[in-house]
Amino acid sequence: MPGTIVHFELPASDADRAAGFWSGVFGWSFGDSGMPGMDYRMADVGGGQGAAIYPGENAGSGPIVYFETDDIEQSIARVRELGGQAEDKAPVPGHGWFSPCQDTEGNRFSLWQPDPTATMPS
Image (cartoon, rainbow, N blue to C red; front, side, top):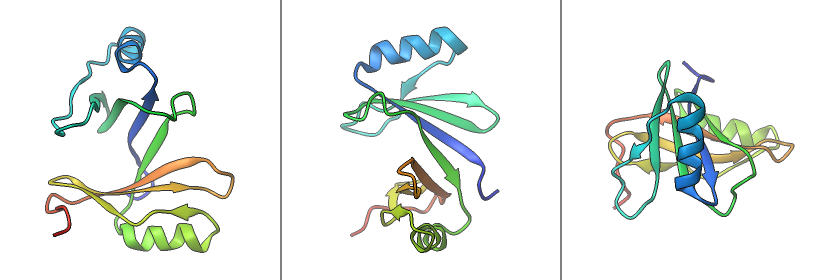
Protein backbone atom coordinates (compact mmCIF):
# COMPACT_ATOMS: atom_id res chain seq x y z
CA MET A 1 0.00 0.00 0.00
CA PRO A 2 1.50 3.37 -0.96
CA GLY A 3 2.86 5.34 1.98
CA THR A 4 3.15 2.35 4.30
CA ILE A 5 6.35 2.28 6.32
CA VAL A 6 8.04 -0.96 5.26
CA HIS A 7 11.58 -0.54 6.56
CA PHE A 8 13.81 1.79 8.53
CA GLU A 9 17.55 2.12 8.95
CA LEU A 10 19.47 3.10 12.06
CA PRO A 11 22.92 4.41 11.09
CA ALA A 12 25.47 3.72 13.83
CA SER A 13 29.00 4.74 14.71
CA ASP A 14 29.32 1.31 16.43
CA ALA A 15 27.04 -1.26 14.80
CA ASP A 16 27.69 -3.91 17.49
CA ARG A 17 26.74 -1.49 20.26
CA ALA A 18 23.64 -0.30 18.36
CA ALA A 19 22.47 -3.87 17.66
CA GLY A 20 22.93 -4.71 21.33
CA PHE A 21 20.95 -1.65 22.37
CA TRP A 22 17.95 -2.26 20.10
CA SER A 23 17.99 -6.00 20.83
CA GLY A 24 17.93 -5.18 24.53
CA VAL A 25 15.12 -2.64 24.25
CA PHE A 26 12.75 -4.58 21.98
CA GLY A 27 14.21 -8.08 21.67
CA TRP A 28 14.93 -7.65 17.98
CA SER A 29 17.34 -10.20 16.53
CA PHE A 30 19.68 -8.71 13.93
CA GLY A 31 21.26 -10.93 11.32
CA ASP A 32 23.49 -10.51 8.30
CA SER A 33 21.64 -9.23 5.25
CA GLY A 34 23.62 -11.43 2.89
CA MET A 35 24.78 -8.44 0.84
CA PRO A 36 28.44 -9.10 0.04
CA GLY A 37 30.90 -6.50 1.26
CA MET A 38 28.36 -4.67 3.41
CA ASP A 39 27.92 -4.64 7.18
CA TYR A 40 24.15 -4.25 6.96
CA ARG A 41 22.31 -6.07 9.75
CA MET A 42 18.59 -6.68 9.43
CA ALA A 43 15.77 -7.56 11.82
CA ASP A 44 12.09 -8.38 11.33
CA VAL A 45 10.29 -6.05 13.74
CA GLY A 46 6.80 -7.40 13.01
CA GLY A 47 3.83 -6.23 11.02
CA GLY A 48 5.68 -6.69 7.74
CA GLN A 49 8.30 -4.12 8.72
CA GLY A 50 12.05 -4.49 8.83
CA ALA A 51 14.86 -2.61 10.53
CA ALA A 52 18.54 -2.38 9.66
CA ILE A 53 21.66 -1.22 11.45
CA TYR A 54 24.77 -0.28 9.54
CA PRO A 55 27.96 1.67 10.25
CA GLY A 56 27.53 5.11 8.77
CA GLU A 57 28.94 8.61 8.84
CA ASN A 58 25.41 9.89 9.41
CA ALA A 59 25.09 8.16 12.81
CA GLY A 60 23.04 10.23 15.20
CA SER A 61 21.04 11.92 12.44
CA GLY A 62 17.94 9.81 13.14
CA PRO A 63 16.32 6.84 11.44
CA ILE A 64 15.81 6.71 7.70
CA VAL A 65 12.25 5.58 6.98
CA TYR A 66 11.35 3.70 3.78
CA PHE A 67 7.86 4.32 2.39
CA GLU A 68 6.34 1.87 -0.08
CA THR A 69 5.18 3.07 -3.47
CA ASP A 70 3.48 1.32 -6.38
CA ASP A 71 5.42 3.37 -8.95
CA ILE A 72 8.82 4.56 -7.77
CA GLU A 73 9.55 6.63 -10.86
CA GLN A 74 6.26 8.52 -10.50
CA SER A 75 6.93 9.05 -6.78
CA ILE A 76 10.46 10.34 -7.48
CA ALA A 77 9.00 12.82 -9.96
CA ARG A 78 6.37 13.92 -7.43
CA VAL A 79 8.98 14.47 -4.68
CA ARG A 80 10.96 16.66 -7.07
CA GLU A 81 7.86 18.57 -8.27
CA LEU A 82 6.95 19.39 -4.66
CA GLY A 83 10.40 20.84 -3.92
CA GLY A 84 12.06 17.82 -2.33
CA GLN A 85 15.13 15.95 -3.52
CA ALA A 86 15.14 12.40 -4.84
CA GLU A 87 17.94 10.33 -6.29
CA ASP A 88 17.29 8.10 -9.27
CA LYS A 89 16.07 4.62 -8.35
CA ALA A 90 18.64 1.96 -7.49
CA PRO A 91 18.12 -1.81 -7.29
CA VAL A 92 18.32 -4.20 -4.40
CA PRO A 93 18.69 -7.26 -6.65
CA GLY A 94 15.90 -9.77 -6.25
CA HIS A 95 13.95 -7.52 -3.85
CA GLY A 96 13.09 -4.13 -5.31
CA TRP A 97 14.02 -0.52 -5.97
CA PHE A 98 14.81 2.35 -3.62
CA SER A 99 15.43 6.07 -3.88
CA PRO A 100 17.04 8.15 -1.11
CA CYS A 101 15.13 11.43 -0.73
CA GLN A 102 14.79 14.58 1.34
CA ASP A 103 11.63 16.55 2.00
CA THR A 104 11.44 20.34 1.75
CA GLU A 105 12.73 20.62 5.35
CA GLY A 106 15.81 18.44 4.81
CA ASN A 107 14.38 15.33 6.50
CA ARG A 108 15.80 12.18 4.96
CA PHE A 109 13.58 9.30 3.85
CA SER A 110 13.57 6.69 1.10
CA LEU A 111 11.04 5.36 -1.35
CA TRP A 112 10.70 1.59 -1.83
CA GLN A 113 9.02 -0.40 -4.59
CA PRO A 114 9.03 -4.18 -4.18
CA ASP A 115 10.09 -6.00 -7.35
CA PRO A 116 11.63 -9.48 -7.25
CA THR A 117 12.92 -8.95 -10.81
CA ALA A 118 15.07 -5.93 -9.86
CA THR A 119 18.65 -6.33 -11.09
CA MET A 120 21.83 -4.27 -11.30
CA PRO A 121 22.13 -2.30 -14.56
CA SER A 122 24.23 -3.96 -17.24
